[in-house]
Amino acid sequence: MSAFDRAILIVLDGCGVGAAPDAADYGDVGENHPDTLGHLAEAVGGLNLPTLQALGLGNIAPLRGVPPANAPRAHYGKVQPHSKGKDSVTGHWEMMGLHTEVPFPTYPNGFPPEIMQAFESRIGRQTLGNYPASGTEIIRQLGAEHLRTGKPIVYTSADSVFQIAAHEAVIPVEALYRMCEIARELLQPPHHVQRVIARPFIGDSPETFRRTENRRDFPLPPPPNLIDALASRGVGVYGIGVVPELFVYRGFRHAERTQSNPEHHQALVRALASDCAFIFANFEDFDMLYGHRNDPEGFARALEAFDGMLAELLALLQPTDWLILTADHGNDPTTPSTDHSREYLPLLIYSPSVEAGRDLGVRRTLADIGATIGARWGASLTHGVDMLA
Image 1 (cartoon, helix red, strand yellow):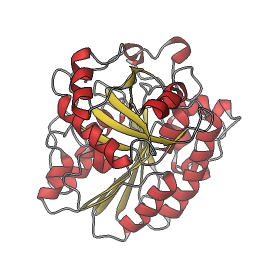
Image 2 (image 1 turned 30 degrees about the vertical axis):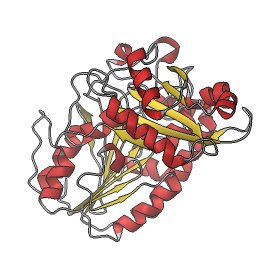
Image 3 (image 1 turned 180 degrees about the vertical axis):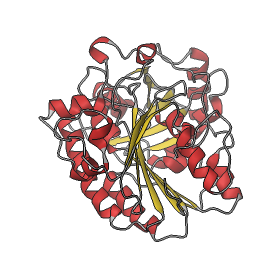
């Protein structure tokens, strides 16, 4: 694999490529047995992804409409995630060299009284909900009562999250963010949930309620990781989308909290014109808008739109650039579950200087990505990872 002077890491949020060997440990069995891209392609009668097909996406796993390339333009393979969790934080942290060996706490029966009582005392009002639910479903269920009472809606999921939903006209966005900061302060071990998430919405009835793009994440601060190591060496890091939040904005020279795939694309174009040598972006529409809502048609449209954006990005790359495409977890929109899924993750590595791609096989951790990027600038990771070349 050729040397590089700039690395661009794009995470296709939720785009898994088949059940991982430990999927059963996460409840992903039976009717919830996942294969996000494979099942999606079948559900919509085939995907039309000429750019990803040329790179070698169809060489990683069978995909209807995306046949294997005879001469893939990228190195290709898949990753079996190592960390104990199937969510964005563990996935992104693992890419940067952090293995989560003990799962973060989850709350299938809601949060205990000591947490909720302390939270309600601090915010000065009672809450609604406090049970696992889909974000769109819980505002349909409780949104009208929230409008009447002003009580924020608290809920969780299969992930380690404390989510607070509130109508923007009832609890202004900045006030909702302050509630999330309070929750983050309260949620300490053993209740150290991975993320507190603000989920603002608008609308005047269950039929018109919809979440806005003013979501904000309040994760636990990560231990020292590749981003810190690069920053300490003077390497500019440019974070796009949810990425800076997942690392509490630490170590980034530039950070853009863009909120949709088209916005992420425009931020990437700006990043390529910057002085940063590592660009780290998350494209979350696949997961947030379609995976969690069991909408395969919308998921497919988003992938096809991304494929067009990707073609534009490839034309902007320099000969010594590396573009790395992967995912953080799965989110199969064709199963009854609306939660993330434990899956293998795609891996494509492209550079204009690569004449022909090769099979990278099955990697045993996403940290191989970080190890390879870090080695370019003398930042070593010590989690038993392997170089990609």
